[in-house]
Amino acid sequence: MIKAFGSCTEEKNPVIESAEFILKDNPHVQLSLAGIEDVADELLGLIQAQNYTPNTWRTQPTHFLPPTPFDAANPRTKQCIDWIFLVSALNFSFWSEHQGLPTRYGVSWKSSWDAQDALEKGIPITDPVFYASEESCPDALIEEIFAPVQESQETISLLPQRIAIMREVGKVLVKRAPNQSFFGILESINANTAKGHRTIALLQAILEYFPCFRDSTTYKGHKVYFWKRAQILVAELWAAFYPLEPSIQHPIIPDGVDYLTMFADYRVPQILHHLGTLTYSEELEIILSRGDHLEYGSEIECSIRAGSILAVEQLKARMVNKLNKRGARASEWKGKHHSELSINCVLIDFFLWDLAKLVEAGEFSTGRKTAPLACHRTRSIFY
Ligand SMILES: Nc1nc2c(c(CN[C@H]3C=C[C@H](O)[C@@H]3O)cn2[C@@H]2O[C@H](COP(=O)(O)O)[C@@H](O)[C@H]2O)c(=O)[nH]1
Image 1 (tube, rainbow, N blue to C red):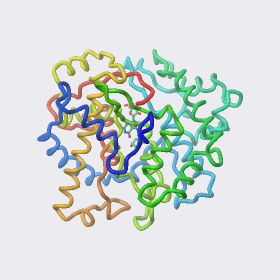
Image 2: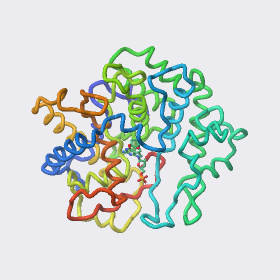
Image 3: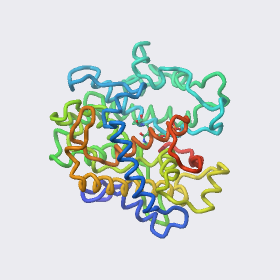
């Protein structure tokens, strides 16, 4: 049965099918196959040189780390899973009307993304029972958490929607999740789903339980799916709990993330275009330079996201091919913790996102002749 929000199919992620439909004869966005070929080489080189692995996730200063080795009974494990869940629910629309200026929105309170800091201050921010309730976690506290730095001339975008999402997802967890935690959902899926199907079942469950994760729209009369936040939730859980020892099976995402596509936001498309994997129409380039807003679900907005999904699929195919050709899949990966690592869209996406941030901060030069075009401006709860 195809559900209103879409069904994960075993054969192919519907996000890829949607992107293919959108990109066919698309007047605004096309893949540059020559660019993709070169960038695949370039990225492989960078990923290997930097020893970039799923464990790199652990090096981000704001990430709340789980205990190692994995310990289901350690309260921090549940807290970490619930923190990743909450952050993924709120992981949208941070682009600023004041891009590049000191007046842009910046969060003043460390606790807003730093769960460790919040917990130390006695705010149980990872606990759905706490944030589902207006009594224990009033709107005013959420506003305070997202309050801007003094020099900022804007507040966080879509604050009412963020508050509504916290209540919505919190209430679902409190009512329906075993142990009132996302960890309960995860454990129940892993226990009740056949081997090889658990990642898909998890993605499907996220879409079923939480309407605010259903990132889909209609393109030329056809239902299309992007599922950015739902997929990145699975991916961040995978990266956060990626074992430090290669011989150990993944404790919570045992079937891996090969099923997932990249997460179509506004930052990764920007770097993919800058690197030369995508070509844009003149009209689209003008729209981006002018900073025009693009409606969620509009044809151009769908096209940008679809282009990024397929560019990363193509990059992955070429990178895997190159590794296989070199016979290097197992032997040449000298990751810090892993001698064996295969490329997937999640790793490429995370690497590109981090790279985009370095380029934006002027800390890395891609050697391209022109600077990146501005990212596209869509105000949406989905990315
Ligand atoms: N495709 C993709 N999009 C990502 C992320 C992340 C962060 N993930 C962490 C996990 C691994 C990485 O190492 C990161 O530390 C955020 N976003 C999206 O970007 C936008 C915010 O951008 P800006 O306004 O510049 O801060 C917003 O739509 C947000 O949802 C990612 O990884 N992939």
